[in-house]
Amino acid sequence: MKKQLTLIRHAKSSWDNTSLSDHARDLNKRGRRDAARMGEALRKREISFDLILCSSAKRARETLALLRERLEIEDDAVTFLDDLYCAPAPTLVELIRQVDNSKNSIAIIAHNPGLEDLATMLSDEREPFSTCTVMQIEFEMDSWKQVDKVIGKRTLFLSPKTV
Image (cartoon, rainbow, N blue to C red; front, side, top):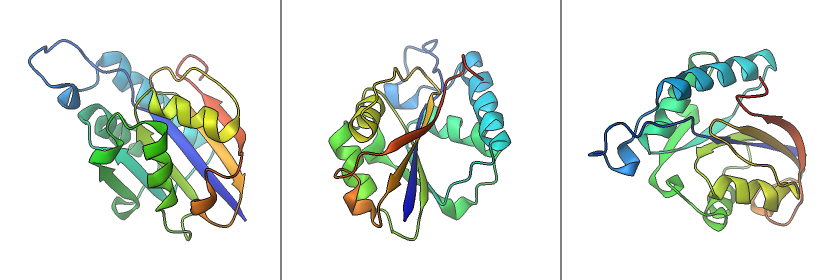
């Protein structure tokens, strides 16, 4: 059976308001534009998700909101997790391993360096994850519990500069 994992780094955030915590920073103008463009690029490729795990950070939630304007994503397909905020790759693996096996296509919207490290670990390909980068990895496995035991194949890599 095939499982697809899509890793999405949040779009470019604003540093204008220095009184905000890192968790509360929102997207800047470029980030909003890039997230909308990436949503359109995913729509054109007819990519859909059974489940989206999204960091609770404001910039990640805003990235998801802009993607949702272009993609058909049901409310019950989205889960916001504090544990995704700046999570390292091993934490991301543990969260993926907990996903219900009926979900064959999942996405994670989170942060670097965890996403980039996870992509390298699961695909054996090192690519820089600039803001709003999207990487899809396909696995031949029956269960998400196997995710760290199987090397996947990168099937998509997009960045705002390439779309």
